[in-house]
Length: 484
Image (cartoon, rainbow, N blue to C red; front, side, top):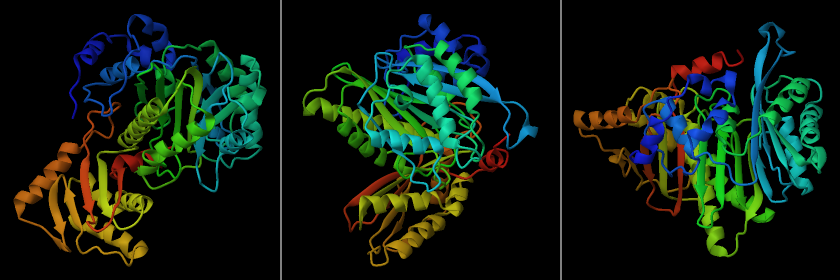
């Protein structure tokens, strides 16, 4: 666990600003007040420190939220009445625009959900990517995902894109705008409200300092914003934001994630690098085992810093990997009702890395094991049962006779037998879970601790690290009342 550096402690000390600066009634208030408070000159470490309050966490993110050169971001809030549920009355909807004010970029990449019922923005995004045309803006809305709705979802997405293109006078027109939506599935996108009200206000609030407001305003059931950043040795910068708390077991990316950089990386390389980073991060997490219909990860460059030579390109890949991995872990920790984060490390697996990752997901998705972790109950039989179930279904000929399992570093299973040594071991395992527990209602991440689970097959050479969450009453409460 990394300790809080003195510079971050100082930032926390100067954030005694009115709570309205963080409220939905003043979505861009923080940016208006921020010049005197923040320098935006920090990067996030690979592992975040502990935090004592929401204000301390948000101050930390603000210091690390400086936008790469050549980017502007604006957010706004509007309202709509859902046609599918008018009795709910007027609901708030937020819109965020990411803009390249100096012109479109050919250097962008994206990965999308493999769900067979993709949202209309996914269909538009795939078409944009396949066309090879440049992009100059992304428009994002929360509350309504524009998936399998009545009417013409693609036309509604394009209407919002057209409003952005016209208002910003983009030379590439509507095809240079990428849409993205998250929220309730099945509802029509309130395209007119977004196009005529939210988009103009978001453009009025454009600023080129911080990505913090965007990280906050794309949230739905998220309890706190998620942002990671890294500055390369040549001065180029990468900043990523993400949202997602439920319906998370990605199969390409996950949730919504937007990564901005001023490093000039060719399109083909950027797409390949994004895919590599996604496989080691977003594709290695699960909150509830449900793959979203709207999963999107996008990276785009403003091309301000030349990237010449393998050394700096390798540095870029490593930084991108770190940002995506950090965001992925943040998503699990911020999962709906998450009281514990599980880290499953699989080593020497007799198969491929993909199969090892699938085993990790199988473990963190086991309802019985998730409930045991929730209750700080080291019911290790449920862990063994989950591993054995996967191997029996998908790797029937594999040797498991030498397998070793650990919890919190303590050996609990070896060569087909449990290693149980009385009440002291039971208490040690339970204490490890208690130590990793977090408040599932908290609006900031208290710590970065995990329930550490190790599975070593000894006989293979594949490996994976997968993150997942437990199953709490809060998860059920959130999803039983999601639309309201």
